[in-house]
Length: 196
Image 1 (cartoon, helix red, strand yellow):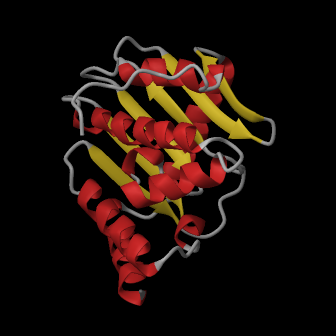
Image 2 (cartoon, rainbow, N blue to C red; image 1 turned 180 degrees about the horizontal axis):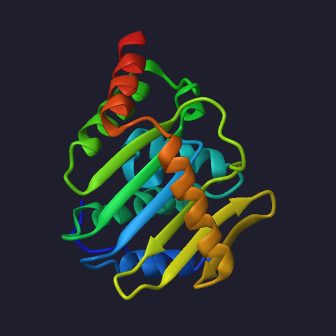
């Protein structure tokens, strides 16, 4: 994996490109908060990245799909940024989607490895949590600015330093409090791994 954040292709939507722009600039003292109902892109295995891109871009060219896979893979470089913390809330429904056993095994093992990083915390929201229907990510920069990328039925949307971004940060905090602890989350991941 390259140590440099990848350039953003022209075909990436403007909201996503704006979010990636802030993600690219992550420095010490910054944090990323993500709530997902699937495996977060930053901790996806290459096989799942490819499957995700093929599904999302099924009507596009093979060249564009390959470019999307490369982008999604290379942006994971930010996980190694010194002083940047990542907090992932993963809804348990993400583990109910069964892919090929080999792919699922690799992905679950990857999550366990990522959870062992000192700057990464993974917690699972088990059971029903009201008020969360779509994936969203927040970048809280060391200067205090807050940037939100969220997805809904109309596509991706980007908000920067707005009341809505603050509301989502509060919603994340409430979900964080109700989620399984980091250790219990890894134990649950291991249980899904044992079922394969």
